[in-house]
Image 1 (cartoon, rainbow, N blue to C red):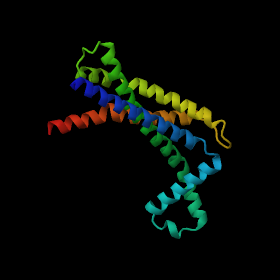
Image 2: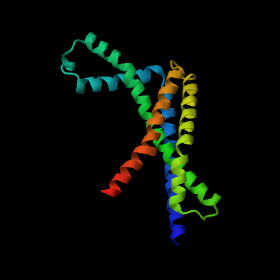
Image 3: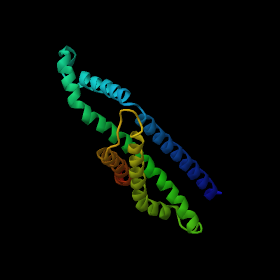
Image 4: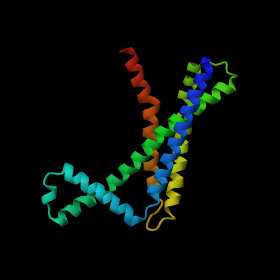
Length: 186
């Protein structure tokens, strides 16, 4: 009975993670589908907000000075947004792949392997597939952007996106387990 309940919980968890991962991929696709003017307008709004919060006297600056400051921040803000989108994707992919590996190990090993052993195997093997899936999605995203008016696919963006996936996957693979181990000791 205990095993059946555990399997149901893990199946539910895997289903939810899969749905969240797909939903996030759809969100990224939607953001990449914006034409250049709409995307630039959205970035400008974010940059204006950042400047109004963090730059002293921004509201009193002459329009030309505001525009110059916004232009300086456009590249880092846009690439930061890319990295953030893909870091979240990297976290979701890592968690989802982990759950699928735990299930595969359960059935491949004829149910004989303890859950803790299956989880240990999954922790060691989930990172590379999550990274590869994130890289492939970043490539497909840049290809998709070549079909959007005013947008282009850039190798640099694939690298930025993949760095985001790497950061998110590393967070899940190394930092969170270390924190949870620390909490158990305390």
